[in-house]
Amino acid sequence: MKNFAVIGVAGYIAERHLRAIKDTGNNLVASLDKNDSVGILDSYFPKSNFFVEFERFDRYIERLKRQENVQLDYVSVCTPNYLHDSHIRMALRRGADAICEKPLVLNPWNIDALEAIEAEGENSINAVLQLRLHSSVIALKNKIINQKKTSKYEIDLTYITSRGNWYGISWKGDESKSGGIITNIGIHFFDMLTWIFGKEQESHVYLREFNKASGYLELENARVRWFLSIDEGDLSNEIITTGKRTYRSIVVDGEELEFSDGFTDLHTKTYQEILRGRGFSLQEARASIETVYNIRNTKIINKGFKHPYLCK
Image (cartoon, rainbow, N blue to C red; front, side, top):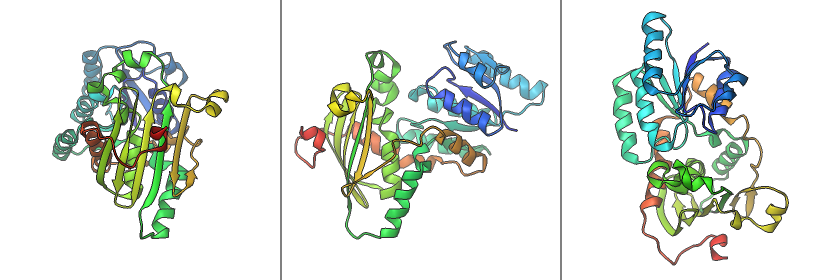
């Protein structure tokens, strides 16, 4: 049984980490969040300690080690994106491995700094890149490898996930903290595409607004038209009438990749792989971080190979 701590335990994604810790038979010794709406702990680890102040949380972890000989093995980071870097460093300073939600960091040079710190000790940093563990995504990767196609694949990526007015008020609405929707909702898909189809070769941006963005990405083995949105108005009437508020689609050479299901246990699978020593490293997370950074900072142009939603 390994000892875990969770930073950012009141957040939406934290429950998946709590479930993964419990499902893999491990123990939560402590958690931290400035918000105290953490009743979810009762469903998983009611006897674990909870803190709203970092200083007391940090002191408790230190006391466990020095007075009770309890070693912290992992720190799971579920905090806002701009804090990931700092909280990963805290985990390493405490002699624990870090497990960090997407995006691992906001800028490529943050990875360079973390690599230097990781090399100084014995602990590792693990990125949560759960789409790589989705059965449909794995099947697509294997299919691409076996096909050995000489020409590039033509891909349309569409992801619309409706968000209410709260989104702009929260830290997610501040691009300096979240990286904007390109990073916050897009990075898993860009990671998946670069993992399957190779490194970025060319990138164009046609639209980049607070609630939607679109562009073109050329990879070693694919040409990708992408469209990301948190605007409910971009959903089709067909989707709206079903009561759904999210639409995700990846079409590869005219064939749609079906992955609407199979997301519920991906964090548990991620933890299982990490515990086996097969977590996703800093280097494996680098390509998607570089891609979204380039998209955020690329000059917008008007002409190009545009996504069908943008043409509408």
